[in-house]
Image (tube, rainbow, N blue to C red):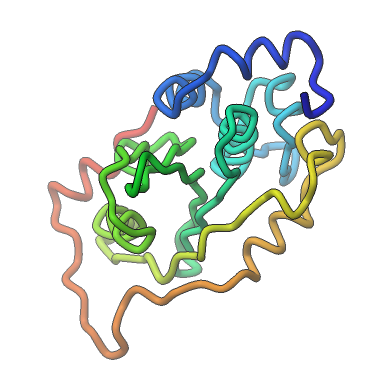
Length: 197
């Protein structure tokens, strides 16, 4: 399966639901890229046992694919002073959910209760702000299907810059109407937003 080693295949088989995959992602330490930017494949992420959001989303998508689901990503773009975020999408019946690798308390897993990708993406809007209270979410992507890259990306030893670049350049939908003045997050929201693990 996908050219996985026996150990990798064992991990993939064991993680047979989005909930189990999310629990697994939560245990992987954050990849803070201290030695330079990375975009690890699922294989390298498992070996190095660290991941940032896109690396986690790639791993989650690969595992879901091994269980017969589409490997889909959702990219959330923000203002330059904040960080973009990527989650792995999944569906249960007609409803969308998401798995997320993050150190933040609120940019996490989403249960499959959302009727559309927009509805799910917008669930992140009010949690997306900087320490000064500025709400920073600008847009979200169409579901980004990883099938078009074949399966080699799952076990690649190289950084997956092509996938990252294509995701960044893919069609995105703006979320804030023009000329709308947004209320800043309040002190309690900012305090909660600083909780990380």
